[in-house]
Amino acid sequence: MEQAAVDSEALEVWIDQDLCTGDGICAQYAPEVFELDIDGLAYVKGPDDELLQARGATTPVPLPLLTDVVDSARECPGDCIHVRRISDSVEIYGPDAE
Image 1 (tube, rainbow, N blue to C red):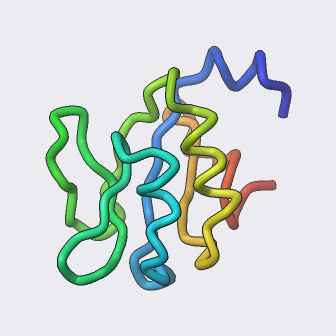
Image 2 (tube, rainbow, N blue to C red; image 1 turned 90 degrees about the horizontal axis):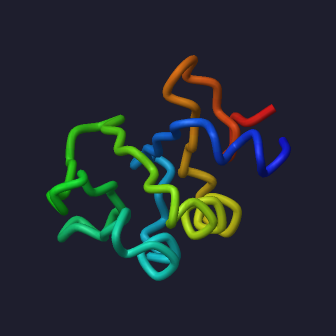
């Protein structure tokens, strides 16, 4: 997908905790978006910095952090980070991206 097309789209990210290996790579790349909880698994954080612990919880991807979030999805050993367009829920980065 072209970078220009992605830049104009509102994106959200979520983590499949069933596949999370707890490596914490995502939290290293984008600590504003991801955090490891006491269970050793990664979760997304809401815009208010609150940890979203519900399964499948999504959070918007702040445009300045898009590269960090995409790198997290690409480097994740558990292939558990999903980035999708909010408008149509099509995954553009992550294990289910076309």
